[in-house]
Length: 146
Ligand code: TYD
Image 1 (tube, helix red, strand yellow):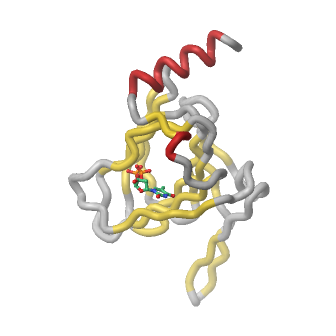
Image 2: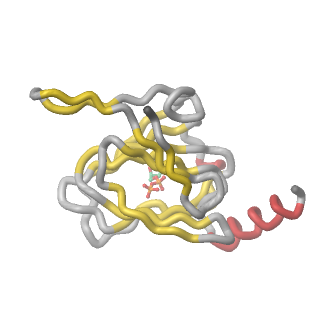
């Protein structure tokens, strides 16, 4: 059965994915609108990331993502403008759901790590906040209007 683990950043959570294992090895799968709450519009992956490098350092206006360490491990820090949380992804049968309007940074990549990302939207540069202060302003405005 699928389980979720709430983390202290707005709308973000860890989800367990199906894992079918036998003597031939393990298999996991992810269905849009089933294991994750959106249809999958895009898949991308990060690999050969040097240990000292950071990825991410942005938030999205509308995009939601599931991030999975399909090989190796790396850390992800999340920031919803009020709370921050850092976790380690190192299990191909668990994914991190990252909501829109959450600033994320990925770092501490192990050798041969592969970061798989399933995204709710196609690539649009206009969907990014790449400036942290601009992101904070947008989050505060959004919460004022609630
Ligand atoms: P970026 O999202 O900044 O990477 P990261 O957050 O992992 O550091 O993207 C890096 C570059 O790749 C940038 O020029 C945009 C481009 N890109 C695409 O063209 N399509 C995509 O789906 C993604 C994710 C990035």
